[in-house]
Image 1 (cartoon, rainbow, N blue to C red):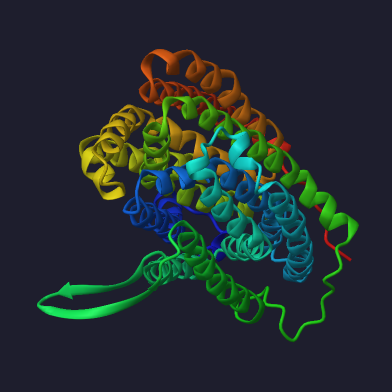
Image 2: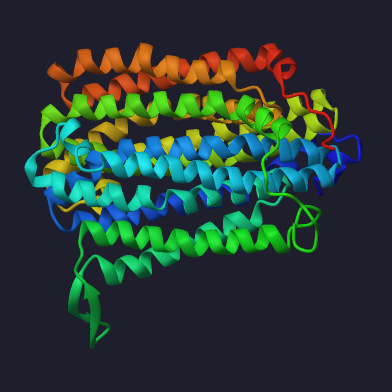
Amino acid sequence: MSIKLIQEGKPLDFRQRLKLAAQLSWPAIMAQLSSIIMQYIDASMVGRLGADDSASIGLMSSSLWLFWGVCSAATAGFSVQVAHRVGAADYASARKIVAQGLSASFLFGMAVALIGLAIARPLPHWLGGSEAVCGNATLYFAVFVGALPLLTLNYLGSGVLRAAGNMKVPGGLNVMMCALDVVFNLFLIFPTREVDWLGFSFTIPGAGLGVLGAALGTVSAEVVTVALILWYLLTRQEHIALRGREVSYRPTRPVIRNAVKVAAPMTLEHAVFAAAQIMITIIVAPLGIMAIAANAFAVTAESLCYMPGFGIGDAATTLTGQSYGAGRPRLAKQFAYITVGMGMAIMTVMGIILYIAAPAVMALMSPVEEICALGAEALRIEAWAEPMYAASIVAYGAMVGVGDTILPAIMNFGSIWLVRIPLAAFLAPTMGLAGVWAAMCAELCFRGLIFLWRLRGGYWLRKGLHTAPLA
């Protein structure tokens, strides 16, 4: 089943739409899962170093999500435009958008990186971290934000390839990144050591950098991945490869205006949303180092459930974006319904698995019994919210595909600030970490309901991005 059927204006029955949605979703799901497995690897390896090192990473997780999310959202304005142009078979304009997106995204990543490096030292103290964790927390954060210009190009390259209907290359490269992360971490986190395996004894060299090694290992894997993604995008991707074609990398007003229209609400949403996550960290911090570490590990563990939803959401963005660009809004709505249903079904199953396997999953993350017990309790609370969380994730992806981002962004950050934060602050003093996660569960169910309500109304299709061919 080819995505070109959308561009060619051919009719697609339900079975064809379902098959096309599945074909685009699975590579995207694998890409998302590989990134989560990479986080599992980091958390598991660092967890073996002790509670203080685990807490130093957990303390900075929400802040890193803020910076990553802002950079990722900033690139969405270009990938949505590419999806529309590809859907309309206007490949010349698509190439111009790609070229301008590369230069604009790199400059944006540089600006965000400089801001992050400027606050890297005081940030752990602002978040309520103890002296035992602040030093490593600063190092961990500084390495990641320093690599943001390249990571932003990774976001753009992956987003543009998905917008063009190519899920396999970014998916495969992200799986490769996961494998590289294991290799780099193995040599950077731990010191040189003797290992016995299947009766053989051998020496594994290591730098013994601990938390700093975990950051350097992951960033190294990301650098290799972004180089390959950009090489493929610039030289191999059908219709939009730039090699051999004269295009200007200088941003122009129409492209930047449309990019800002899509990305500005998403960027603000990510900033406000991540600020809320930081607020959750502040609420959790007084509960102690064990609670901080358990919360961070549980967030990582729970992501195994919701990342399939984000993968399907990426597919929804491509399908609705190309359908909208091809002038087929009814098809865009049909794809939205199909992908939301798929997401809810898969994440329901994942939620059941998470509930059953919560203690075993936490045991993989940390050898500390108290951390495992707190984290397992949190995960079993959260498992109940997975179906409605899927509805919000995939519906949001479908709306982004047509360029409708303002109201969905307000719905996302309004829900977390008006429901989750007040409820968590109220429950944490009496229920501890379980109260924080009960608040999260309630808020995610509420968010899913309001996204389903808006999806059904169809008004989002009338709020899409309207573009004209580029000169």
